Image (cartoon, rainbow, N blue to C red; front, side):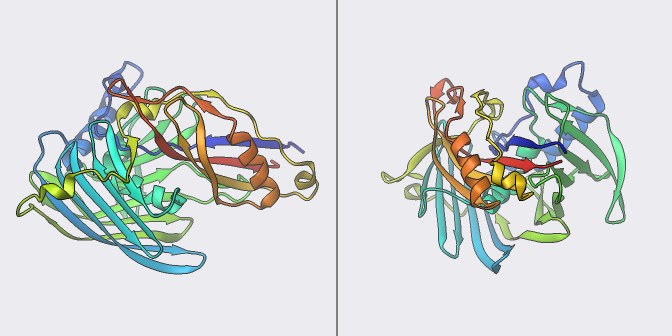
Length: 339
């Protein structure tokens, strides 16, 4: 029997452009062009784009039932925007800044479904490729009865990261398969579906977004309105004195993990054939150290403690945006597997 412990770092950032490096010789030109076309179509937040106000209702389905909330994004420019998310027991406000955003939140962490929502709402983040990622050739798949053109993205080790599928007429991204975060003994497919596209200022934006885990819709987003702002209240875009500053730029996606301490598989857990995935909320400080580590998805106390003990010792290269030191937050998933 092979005993192992896999460490998976899942980074969620909000990037708006495919880097120039993505058009290297080892990336199929047609695949890069397909992804760029979708970015041009769907990136409401592109530099120089029209100001807008987006409002949506959100539904989360979890082990404790279904709960709903509201989302609003007021966007004037890359550095002038306001995003509000209100859910039962959770409220978050973000105000755009030079290096990212300032955040006020009624908790010092956020759960994995909130990270999943953030990633699904920022479509161009899925289309962005990091310096260490490789784009595969275009292949066709039939999903929900429709023939789609798909591209697979792998990491530097050749492991699957995500598959992006585009419809043929407008070239919009309509389906994304994401890397599995669960135990290899019981894998759960995670995907995002985009539909009901509406034209806005020469862009196409999906009015319906569904995040699926396994065979269940776990997050549903229904955009109720996408309109031009009547006028901007400058007070709404002023950062709060009570907020925390966070980085948000393309460079953060390629942040290097300098010191990765491997988790130790507890012997008692091995003997009991315990396995699973532990997801930990972390804040990466300006010096690359981790803080505020907290279990947000559990695999049981023994595996949780082993994962947490290791991850607290990890260290990244100092994160920067536009040459300035910043902080960032990300979930880290550690997989304990007996296979």
